[in-house]
Amino acid sequence: MLKALLGISLVPAILAGAVPRQQEATQAEQAARLLQEDLNRKAFEGLPALGVDVLVYPPEAQREGFPAETFKTDVQLRLRQNGLRVLEDFELEPHSPLLKVSILLLKREGGYVYRFDIELSERVALVRKPAGVLLATTWHDGAVGITGKDRYSAVRDGVREYLDRFINQYLAANPKR
Image (tube, rainbow, N blue to C red; front, top):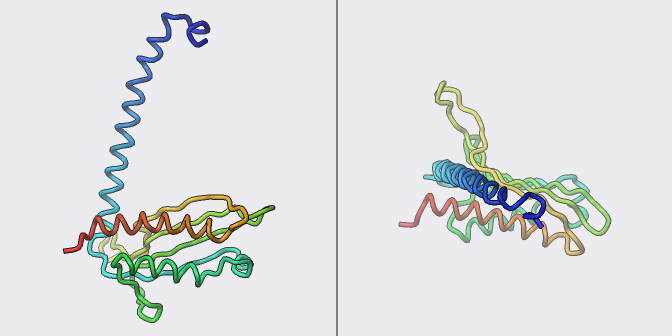
């Protein structure tokens, strides 16, 4: 069908032109991925401990089966099981790294539309002004989804999957000795 529409002589030319562009895109994507992996490794190297905070929006969602404390306990447990030191709330100091999980839920017929973000925030010094220390996100990931009948487990499983990405990148930057 394509040959009939374009003419047989144009097909090889079109395909030949598409291959280098596809290779260029693949090379650019690979370079971007390698750069991101390097930045992630630097963000995780030597991270001694971190606090955990979980926010669920809107507040009504907590009453409808999405309790922030349950998510927080789940996140803390998973981090500890993988060897990360998790600070209790009373141990947190202004300079403590903080892993924040934000969950936004929008009720719809039969379930929810949700978005969650997982981000590591730390105090950092600006290169141009080392005395200028501020709070910055040094790692971030997240997703959007739709739940059906089993609302809580869909969101929980998504958060766990992305938390595992965080853990794997942390472990890659901090191999056990």
